[in-house]
Image (cartoon, rainbow, N blue to C red; front, side, top):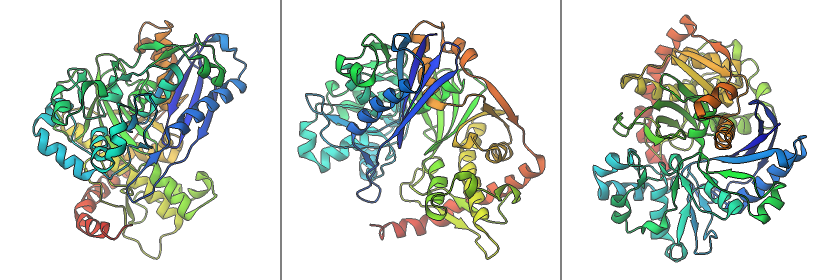
Length: 498
Protein backbone atom coordinates (compact mmCIF):
# COMPACT_ATOMS: atom_id res chain seq x y z
CA UNK A 1 0.00 0.00 0.00
CA UNK A 2 1.06 3.58 -0.65
CA UNK A 3 0.89 6.24 2.05
CA UNK A 4 0.92 9.99 2.64
CA UNK A 5 1.76 11.92 5.80
CA UNK A 6 -0.22 14.77 7.33
CA UNK A 7 1.66 17.04 9.74
CA UNK A 8 -0.42 19.22 12.05
CA UNK A 9 1.71 21.89 13.74
CA UNK A 10 -0.41 22.88 16.72
CA UNK A 11 0.10 25.33 19.55
CA UNK A 12 1.19 22.79 22.14
CA UNK A 13 2.38 19.88 19.99
CA UNK A 14 2.97 18.61 16.48
CA UNK A 15 0.96 15.58 15.40
CA UNK A 16 1.85 13.40 12.43
CA UNK A 17 -0.46 10.93 10.68
CA UNK A 18 0.39 8.10 8.29
CA UNK A 19 -2.62 7.62 6.03
CA UNK A 20 -3.04 4.87 3.44
CA UNK A 21 -4.82 4.91 0.10
CA UNK A 22 -7.76 3.31 1.90
CA UNK A 23 -8.23 6.52 3.91
CA UNK A 24 -7.34 4.78 7.18
CA UNK A 25 -4.84 6.18 9.66
CA UNK A 26 -2.16 3.49 10.00
CA UNK A 27 0.03 5.27 12.57
CA UNK A 28 0.31 8.53 14.44
CA UNK A 29 2.96 10.23 16.55
CA UNK A 30 3.06 13.42 18.60
CA UNK A 31 5.80 15.58 20.08
CA UNK A 32 5.15 18.47 22.47
CA UNK A 33 7.07 21.75 22.74
CA UNK A 34 6.99 24.66 25.19
CA UNK A 35 5.13 27.96 25.18
CA UNK A 36 6.69 31.12 26.59
CA UNK A 37 4.58 33.70 28.45
CA UNK A 38 7.16 36.20 29.68
CA UNK A 39 4.64 38.99 30.20
CA UNK A 40 0.87 39.20 30.56
CA UNK A 41 -0.68 38.80 27.12
CA UNK A 42 2.52 37.53 25.50
CA UNK A 43 2.65 34.11 23.85
CA UNK A 44 5.75 32.94 21.99
CA UNK A 45 7.50 29.81 20.75
CA UNK A 46 10.96 28.98 19.47
CA UNK A 47 10.69 27.99 15.78
CA UNK A 48 13.55 25.54 16.27
CA UNK A 49 11.31 23.58 18.66
CA UNK A 50 8.81 23.08 15.83
CA UNK A 51 11.52 21.71 13.54
CA UNK A 52 13.04 19.32 16.06
CA UNK A 53 9.58 18.24 17.22
CA UNK A 54 8.39 17.59 13.67
CA UNK A 55 11.42 15.57 12.59
CA UNK A 56 11.30 13.56 15.82
CA UNK A 57 7.58 12.89 15.35
CA UNK A 58 8.20 11.74 11.78
CA UNK A 59 10.85 9.29 13.00
CA UNK A 60 8.47 8.04 15.69
CA UNK A 61 5.73 7.69 13.08
CA UNK A 62 7.84 5.43 10.86
CA UNK A 63 9.13 3.44 13.83
CA UNK A 64 5.58 2.71 14.99
CA UNK A 65 4.37 1.47 11.60
CA UNK A 66 5.21 -1.29 9.15
CA UNK A 67 5.38 1.16 6.27
CA UNK A 68 8.50 1.32 4.13
CA UNK A 69 9.71 4.84 3.40
CA UNK A 70 9.69 3.91 -0.30
CA UNK A 71 5.90 3.59 -0.06
CA UNK A 72 5.41 7.08 1.39
CA UNK A 73 4.63 9.24 -1.62
CA UNK A 74 3.85 12.64 -0.17
CA UNK A 75 3.67 14.90 2.87
CA UNK A 76 1.67 18.04 3.59
CA UNK A 77 1.04 20.36 6.49
CA UNK A 78 -1.54 22.05 8.65
CA UNK A 79 -0.47 24.81 10.97
CA UNK A 80 -1.50 27.23 13.68
CA UNK A 81 -2.45 30.51 12.00
CA UNK A 82 -1.14 34.08 12.28
CA UNK A 83 2.14 33.38 14.11
CA UNK A 84 4.96 35.71 13.05
CA UNK A 85 8.33 34.18 12.16
CA UNK A 86 10.73 36.96 11.13
CA UNK A 87 13.70 35.74 9.09
CA UNK A 88 17.03 37.33 8.25
CA UNK A 89 18.61 37.25 4.80
CA UNK A 90 19.88 33.71 5.49
CA UNK A 91 16.47 32.39 6.48
CA UNK A 92 17.21 32.29 10.21
CA UNK A 93 14.69 33.61 12.79
CA UNK A 94 15.67 36.96 14.33
CA UNK A 95 13.52 36.32 17.44
CA UNK A 96 11.01 33.88 18.87
CA UNK A 97 7.74 33.54 16.97
CA UNK A 98 4.83 35.65 18.25
CA UNK A 99 1.74 33.42 18.27
CA UNK A 100 -1.93 33.76 17.35
CA UNK A 101 -3.01 34.03 21.00
CA UNK A 102 -0.60 36.88 21.82
CA UNK A 103 -2.51 40.06 22.69
CA UNK A 104 0.19 42.74 23.01
CA UNK A 105 -0.70 44.54 19.76
CA UNK A 106 -3.85 46.52 20.60
CA UNK A 107 -2.16 49.84 19.79
CA UNK A 108 -0.98 48.54 16.42
CA UNK A 109 -4.49 47.33 15.59
CA UNK A 110 -5.86 50.83 16.14
CA UNK A 111 -3.06 52.20 13.93
CA UNK A 112 -4.06 49.81 11.15
CA UNK A 113 -7.70 50.89 11.43
CA UNK A 114 -6.77 54.59 11.28
CA UNK A 115 -4.42 54.10 8.34
CA UNK A 116 -6.55 51.83 6.14
CA UNK A 117 -10.06 52.95 7.06
CA UNK A 118 -12.70 51.26 4.89
CA UNK A 119 -10.01 49.50 2.83
CA UNK A 120 -9.30 47.17 5.74
CA UNK A 121 -12.54 45.20 5.44
CA UNK A 122 -12.89 45.78 1.71
CA UNK A 123 -9.51 44.20 0.93
CA UNK A 124 -8.55 41.89 3.78
CA UNK A 125 -12.19 41.00 4.69
CA UNK A 126 -11.23 40.91 8.36
CA UNK A 127 -10.93 43.44 11.21
CA UNK A 128 -7.60 44.33 12.80
CA UNK A 129 -7.29 41.97 15.74
CA UNK A 130 -4.36 41.33 18.05
CA UNK A 131 -3.98 37.75 16.86
CA UNK A 132 -3.26 38.63 13.22
CA UNK A 133 0.19 38.90 11.70
CA UNK A 134 0.44 42.49 10.46
CA UNK A 135 -0.03 44.00 13.95
CA UNK A 136 2.81 41.77 15.16
CA UNK A 137 5.09 43.00 12.37
CA UNK A 138 4.35 46.59 13.34
CA UNK A 139 4.92 45.84 17.03
CA UNK A 140 8.39 44.42 16.38
CA UNK A 141 9.17 47.30 14.04
CA UNK A 142 8.24 49.85 16.72
CA UNK A 143 9.45 48.09 19.87
CA UNK A 144 12.44 46.05 18.69
CA UNK A 145 13.89 48.13 15.83
CA UNK A 146 17.31 46.46 15.96
CA UNK A 147 15.78 43.04 15.49
CA UNK A 148 13.41 44.28 12.81
CA UNK A 149 16.31 45.81 10.90
CA UNK A 150 17.73 42.29 10.51
CA UNK A 151 14.46 40.91 9.10
CA UNK A 152 14.36 40.31 5.36
CA UNK A 153 11.14 38.28 5.17
CA UNK A 154 8.47 36.57 7.24
CA UNK A 155 6.73 33.21 7.31
CA UNK A 156 3.96 31.58 9.28
CA UNK A 157 4.69 28.59 11.55
CA UNK A 158 4.07 25.63 9.24
CA UNK A 159 5.77 27.47 6.38
CA UNK A 160 8.93 27.82 8.45
CA UNK A 161 8.96 24.09 9.17
CA UNK A 162 8.47 23.39 5.47
CA UNK A 163 11.30 25.81 4.64
CA UNK A 164 13.59 23.82 6.89
CA UNK A 165 12.51 20.57 5.23
CA UNK A 166 12.67 21.73 1.60
CA UNK A 167 14.83 24.87 1.52
CA UNK A 168 11.97 26.69 -0.25
CA UNK A 169 9.83 29.63 0.95
CA UNK A 170 6.13 29.63 0.15
CA UNK A 171 2.86 30.53 1.82
CA UNK A 172 -0.53 29.16 0.87
CA UNK A 173 -3.57 31.37 0.42
CA UNK A 174 -5.56 29.96 3.34
CA UNK A 175 -2.80 30.87 5.81
CA UNK A 176 -1.92 34.16 4.09
CA UNK A 177 -5.55 35.25 4.51
CA UNK A 178 -4.88 35.48 8.25
CA UNK A 179 -2.05 38.01 7.95
CA UNK A 180 -4.18 41.12 7.19
CA UNK A 181 -1.96 41.68 4.15
CA UNK A 182 -3.78 39.54 1.59
CA UNK A 183 -6.38 40.74 -0.88
CA UNK A 184 -8.64 37.79 -0.07
CA UNK A 185 -10.88 38.02 -3.14
CA UNK A 186 -7.96 38.91 -5.44
CA UNK A 187 -5.78 36.09 -4.03
CA UNK A 188 -2.61 38.17 -3.89
CA UNK A 189 -0.68 40.36 -1.51
CA UNK A 190 -2.40 43.73 -1.27
CA UNK A 191 -0.33 46.58 -2.68
CA UNK A 192 -2.55 49.01 -0.74
CA UNK A 193 -1.80 47.39 2.60
CA UNK A 194 1.91 46.85 1.99
CA UNK A 195 2.51 50.40 0.78
CA UNK A 196 0.51 51.89 3.65
CA UNK A 197 2.99 50.41 6.13
CA UNK A 198 6.14 50.62 3.99
CA UNK A 199 6.46 46.85 3.68
CA UNK A 200 8.33 45.86 0.51
CA UNK A 201 6.74 43.19 -1.68
CA UNK A 202 9.85 41.05 -1.29
CA UNK A 203 9.21 40.84 2.44
CA UNK A 204 6.29 38.52 1.68
CA UNK A 205 6.82 34.94 0.41
CA UNK A 206 5.48 33.63 -2.92
CA UNK A 207 1.83 32.57 -2.72
CA UNK A 208 0.54 29.13 -3.72
CA UNK A 209 -2.63 27.05 -3.32
CA UNK A 210 -2.75 24.72 -0.32
CA UNK A 211 -2.42 21.68 -2.58
CA UNK A 212 0.57 23.00 -4.53
CA UNK A 213 3.59 20.73 -5.01
CA UNK A 214 6.51 22.78 -3.65
CA UNK A 215 9.42 20.35 -4.02
CA UNK A 216 11.10 17.49 -2.22
CA UNK A 217 13.08 17.08 0.98
CA UNK A 218 16.64 18.25 1.38
CA UNK A 219 19.22 15.53 2.02
CA UNK A 220 19.63 16.74 5.60
CA UNK A 221 15.87 16.81 6.29
CA UNK A 222 15.30 13.40 4.70
CA UNK A 223 18.00 11.87 6.89
CA UNK A 224 16.63 13.54 10.05
CA UNK A 225 13.05 12.41 9.35
CA UNK A 226 13.81 8.98 7.93
CA UNK A 227 12.13 9.75 4.61
CA UNK A 228 13.29 9.71 0.98
CA UNK A 229 14.44 12.93 -0.62
CA UNK A 230 12.02 12.19 -3.45
CA UNK A 231 9.01 12.36 -1.12
CA UNK A 232 6.69 14.96 -2.64
CA UNK A 233 6.09 17.96 -0.40
CA UNK A 234 2.83 19.93 -0.70
CA UNK A 235 2.25 23.39 0.73
CA UNK A 236 -0.57 22.58 3.14
CA UNK A 237 -2.97 25.01 4.74
CA UNK A 238 -4.10 26.88 7.81
CA UNK A 239 -5.28 24.61 10.61
CA UNK A 240 -8.90 25.67 10.26
CA UNK A 241 -8.89 25.24 6.48
CA UNK A 242 -7.34 21.79 6.87
CA UNK A 243 -9.77 20.97 9.65
CA UNK A 244 -12.59 21.80 7.25
CA UNK A 245 -11.07 19.56 4.56
CA UNK A 246 -10.57 16.71 7.04
CA UNK A 247 -14.20 17.02 8.17
CA UNK A 248 -15.54 17.09 4.62
CA UNK A 249 -16.66 20.74 4.67
CA UNK A 250 -16.17 20.98 0.93
CA UNK A 251 -19.57 22.13 -0.32
CA UNK A 252 -22.39 24.44 0.82
CA UNK A 253 -24.74 23.29 3.56
CA UNK A 254 -22.30 21.90 6.12
CA UNK A 255 -20.95 23.66 9.20
CA UNK A 256 -17.87 22.70 11.21
CA UNK A 257 -17.41 23.00 14.96
CA UNK A 258 -13.82 22.42 16.02
CA UNK A 259 -12.76 22.56 19.66
CA UNK A 260 -9.01 22.62 20.14
CA UNK A 261 -7.03 25.11 22.23
CA UNK A 262 -9.27 27.65 20.54
CA UNK A 263 -12.67 26.84 19.09
CA UNK A 264 -14.11 27.66 15.70
CA UNK A 265 -17.42 27.48 13.91
CA UNK A 266 -16.86 27.47 10.18
CA UNK A 267 -19.15 27.53 7.16
CA UNK A 268 -18.25 26.90 3.51
CA UNK A 269 -18.50 29.81 1.06
CA UNK A 270 -18.54 29.27 -2.71
CA UNK A 271 -17.32 32.76 -3.58
CA UNK A 272 -16.25 36.03 -2.01
CA UNK A 273 -19.64 37.73 -2.29
CA UNK A 274 -20.79 37.13 1.31
CA UNK A 275 -20.38 40.21 3.48
CA UNK A 276 -20.32 39.71 7.24
CA UNK A 277 -18.91 43.24 7.77
CA UNK A 278 -16.01 41.94 9.78
CA UNK A 279 -18.17 40.32 12.45
CA UNK A 280 -16.71 36.91 11.61
CA UNK A 281 -13.52 36.00 9.78
CA UNK A 282 -13.56 35.46 6.03
CA UNK A 283 -10.65 33.45 4.65
CA UNK A 284 -9.55 31.51 1.59
CA UNK A 285 -10.28 27.80 1.85
CA UNK A 286 -7.74 25.04 1.29
CA UNK A 287 -9.97 23.93 -1.59
CA UNK A 288 -8.99 25.91 -4.71
CA UNK A 289 -11.30 28.82 -5.46
CA UNK A 290 -13.37 28.46 -2.30
CA UNK A 291 -13.64 30.47 0.93
CA UNK A 292 -14.96 30.02 4.45
CA UNK A 293 -16.46 32.23 7.12
CA UNK A 294 -15.46 31.52 10.69
CA UNK A 295 -16.21 32.61 14.24
CA UNK A 296 -13.60 32.02 16.94
CA UNK A 297 -13.62 31.38 20.68
CA UNK A 298 -10.06 32.04 21.79
CA UNK A 299 -10.07 29.83 24.90
CA UNK A 300 -12.33 26.89 24.08
CA UNK A 301 -10.50 23.67 24.89
CA UNK A 302 -8.00 25.78 26.79
CA UNK A 303 -10.72 26.70 29.28
CA UNK A 304 -11.30 23.05 30.12
CA UNK A 305 -7.58 22.26 30.32
CA UNK A 306 -7.10 25.33 32.55
CA UNK A 307 -9.88 24.09 34.82
CA UNK A 308 -8.34 20.62 35.05
CA UNK A 309 -4.82 21.92 35.68
CA UNK A 310 -6.08 24.31 38.36
CA UNK A 311 -8.68 22.20 40.17
CA UNK A 312 -8.04 18.58 39.15
CA UNK A 313 -4.33 18.41 38.44
CA UNK A 314 -3.16 14.92 37.56
CA UNK A 315 -6.65 13.62 36.85
CA UNK A 316 -7.89 12.43 33.48
CA UNK A 317 -10.65 14.42 31.80
CA UNK A 318 -13.02 11.49 32.33
CA UNK A 319 -12.30 11.52 36.07
CA UNK A 320 -12.68 15.28 36.27
CA UNK A 321 -16.03 15.18 34.44
CA UNK A 322 -17.46 12.32 36.48
CA UNK A 323 -20.94 13.24 37.63
CA UNK A 324 -21.34 16.11 35.15
CA UNK A 325 -23.67 14.01 32.99
CA UNK A 326 -26.10 13.68 35.94
CA UNK A 327 -26.43 17.46 36.36
CA UNK A 328 -29.34 19.05 34.46
CA UNK A 329 -28.74 21.55 31.66
CA UNK A 330 -27.67 24.87 33.17
CA UNK A 331 -25.46 23.49 35.96
CA UNK A 332 -27.95 24.53 38.64
CA UNK A 333 -27.80 28.21 37.71
CA UNK A 334 -24.04 28.45 37.17
CA UNK A 335 -22.70 30.25 34.07
CA UNK A 336 -19.11 30.43 32.80
CA UNK A 337 -17.73 32.78 30.17
CA UNK A 338 -14.55 31.38 28.49
CA UNK A 339 -12.70 34.69 28.16
CA UNK A 340 -9.49 33.50 29.80
CA UNK A 341 -7.23 35.08 27.15
CA UNK A 342 -9.66 37.65 25.78
CA UNK A 343 -12.27 36.95 23.12
CA UNK A 344 -12.57 37.05 19.35
CA UNK A 345 -16.19 36.45 18.21
CA UNK A 346 -18.45 38.33 18.63
CA UNK A 347 -16.48 40.45 21.10
CA UNK A 348 -13.08 41.46 19.69
CA UNK A 349 -11.70 42.31 23.11
CA UNK A 350 -8.19 41.47 24.25
CA UNK A 351 -8.83 42.66 27.83
CA UNK A 352 -12.05 40.86 28.70
CA UNK A 353 -11.59 37.94 31.10
CA UNK A 354 -13.66 34.98 32.18
CA UNK A 355 -16.29 34.77 34.88
CA UNK A 356 -18.27 32.25 36.89
CA UNK A 357 -21.71 33.79 37.50
CA UNK A 358 -24.25 32.47 39.98
CA UNK A 359 -21.97 30.54 42.34
CA UNK A 360 -23.63 29.23 45.51
CA UNK A 361 -22.88 26.70 48.22
CA UNK A 362 -24.68 23.85 46.47
CA UNK A 363 -22.28 23.80 43.55
CA UNK A 364 -19.75 20.98 43.43
CA UNK A 365 -16.69 20.60 41.23
CA UNK A 366 -18.86 18.65 38.78
CA UNK A 367 -21.18 21.66 38.46
CA UNK A 368 -18.22 23.91 37.68
CA UNK A 369 -16.83 21.43 35.13
CA UNK A 370 -20.17 21.17 33.36
CA UNK A 371 -20.57 24.95 33.42
CA UNK A 372 -17.18 25.31 31.69
CA UNK A 373 -18.34 22.97 28.90
CA UNK A 374 -21.63 24.83 28.59
CA UNK A 375 -19.92 28.23 28.53
CA UNK A 376 -17.59 27.17 25.73
CA UNK A 377 -20.58 25.86 23.76
CA UNK A 378 -22.55 29.07 24.35
CA UNK A 379 -19.62 31.08 23.02
CA UNK A 380 -19.48 28.95 19.86
CA UNK A 381 -23.25 29.30 19.50
CA UNK A 382 -22.85 33.07 19.21
CA UNK A 383 -21.08 32.45 15.89
CA UNK A 384 -23.79 30.03 14.76
CA UNK A 385 -26.45 32.62 15.51
CA UNK A 386 -24.51 35.19 13.46
CA UNK A 387 -24.46 32.83 10.47
CA UNK A 388 -28.18 32.24 10.81
CA UNK A 389 -28.81 35.97 11.04
CA UNK A 390 -26.92 36.35 7.73
CA UNK A 391 -29.25 33.82 6.10
CA UNK A 392 -27.02 30.74 6.35
CA UNK A 393 -28.90 27.56 7.29
CA UNK A 394 -27.17 25.67 10.11
CA UNK A 395 -28.97 22.33 10.33
CA UNK A 396 -26.06 19.88 10.41
CA UNK A 397 -22.78 20.49 12.27
CA UNK A 398 -19.74 18.24 11.94
CA UNK A 399 -17.92 18.30 15.28
CA UNK A 400 -14.19 17.63 15.61
CA UNK A 401 -11.51 18.17 18.24
CA UNK A 402 -11.80 17.76 21.99
CA UNK A 403 -15.53 18.43 21.97
CA UNK A 404 -16.07 15.45 19.66
CA UNK A 405 -14.44 12.97 22.03
CA UNK A 406 -17.08 13.23 24.75
CA UNK A 407 -20.69 12.04 24.14
CA UNK A 408 -21.98 14.45 26.82
CA UNK A 409 -20.39 17.38 25.02
CA UNK A 410 -21.65 16.25 21.60
CA UNK A 411 -25.23 16.06 22.90
CA UNK A 412 -24.74 19.43 24.58
CA UNK A 413 -23.68 20.92 21.24
CA UNK A 414 -26.80 19.52 19.55
CA UNK A 415 -29.00 20.95 22.31
CA UNK A 416 -27.37 24.39 22.34
CA UNK A 417 -26.92 24.70 18.55
CA UNK A 418 -30.44 23.36 17.87
CA UNK A 419 -28.96 21.30 15.05
CA UNK A 420 -27.89 17.75 14.26
CA UNK A 421 -24.31 17.21 15.38
CA UNK A 422 -22.29 14.60 13.52
CA UNK A 423 -19.25 12.82 14.89
CA UNK A 424 -16.71 11.25 12.54
CA UNK A 425 -15.56 7.63 12.49
CA UNK A 426 -11.93 8.61 12.22
CA UNK A 427 -11.73 12.12 13.65
CA UNK A 428 -8.22 13.39 13.03
CA UNK A 429 -8.94 17.06 12.40
CA UNK A 430 -6.46 19.24 10.51
CA UNK A 431 -3.86 16.46 10.20
CA UNK A 432 -6.25 14.41 8.07
CA UNK A 433 -6.98 17.47 5.92
CA UNK A 434 -3.25 17.88 5.35
CA UNK A 435 -2.99 14.21 4.39
CA UNK A 436 -5.89 14.67 1.95
CA UNK A 437 -4.05 17.55 0.25
CA UNK A 438 -1.07 15.23 -0.21
CA UNK A 439 -3.27 12.36 -1.45
CA UNK A 440 -4.86 14.55 -4.13
CA UNK A 441 -1.45 16.03 -4.99
CA UNK A 442 -0.04 12.54 -5.50
CA UNK A 443 -2.82 11.78 -7.98
CA UNK A 444 -4.77 9.31 -5.87
CA UNK A 445 -7.98 11.29 -6.41
CA UNK A 446 -9.05 13.88 -8.98
CA UNK A 447 -10.28 16.33 -6.34
CA UNK A 448 -10.64 16.95 -2.61
CA UNK A 449 -14.34 16.15 -2.92
CA UNK A 450 -13.56 12.73 -4.34
CA UNK A 451 -10.92 12.16 -1.69
CA UNK A 452 -13.43 13.06 1.02
CA UNK A 453 -15.74 10.27 -0.09
CA UNK A 454 -13.04 7.77 0.91
CA UNK A 455 -11.31 9.56 3.78
CA UNK A 456 -14.24 11.20 5.66
CA UNK A 457 -16.78 8.88 7.29
CA UNK A 458 -19.71 10.07 9.41
CA UNK A 459 -20.41 8.11 12.59
CA UNK A 460 -23.07 8.80 15.22
CA UNK A 461 -25.55 11.65 14.84
CA UNK A 462 -26.71 13.58 17.94
CA UNK A 463 -30.12 15.26 17.68
CA UNK A 464 -31.41 18.06 19.91
CA UNK A 465 -33.43 17.11 22.97
CA UNK A 466 -36.38 19.49 22.90
CA UNK A 467 -36.57 20.09 26.65
CA UNK A 468 -32.81 20.64 27.04
CA UNK A 469 -32.76 22.83 23.93
CA UNK A 470 -35.53 25.05 25.28
CA UNK A 471 -33.73 25.39 28.63
CA UNK A 472 -30.43 26.18 26.92
CA UNK A 473 -32.19 28.76 24.77
CA UNK A 474 -33.18 30.67 27.90
CA UNK A 475 -29.73 30.31 29.46
CA UNK A 476 -28.04 31.44 26.25
CA UNK A 477 -29.88 34.76 26.42
CA UNK A 478 -28.55 35.24 29.97
CA UNK A 479 -25.05 34.24 28.84
CA UNK A 480 -25.14 36.94 26.16
CA UNK A 481 -25.67 39.58 28.82
CA UNK A 482 -22.57 38.70 30.82
CA UNK A 483 -20.06 40.35 28.46
CA UNK A 484 -21.69 43.79 28.65
CA UNK A 485 -22.20 43.49 32.41
CA UNK A 486 -18.57 42.55 33.15
CA UNK A 487 -16.57 44.34 30.42
CA UNK A 488 -16.07 47.57 32.35
CA UNK A 489 -14.93 45.76 35.49
CA UNK A 490 -12.52 43.57 33.54
CA UNK A 491 -11.04 46.49 31.65
CA UNK A 492 -10.41 48.29 34.95
CA UNK A 493 -8.84 45.16 36.47
CA UNK A 494 -6.53 44.77 33.47
CA UNK A 495 -4.31 47.57 34.80
CA UNK A 496 -3.59 45.46 37.90
CA UNK A 497 -2.32 42.41 35.96
CA UNK A 498 1.43 41.85 35.78
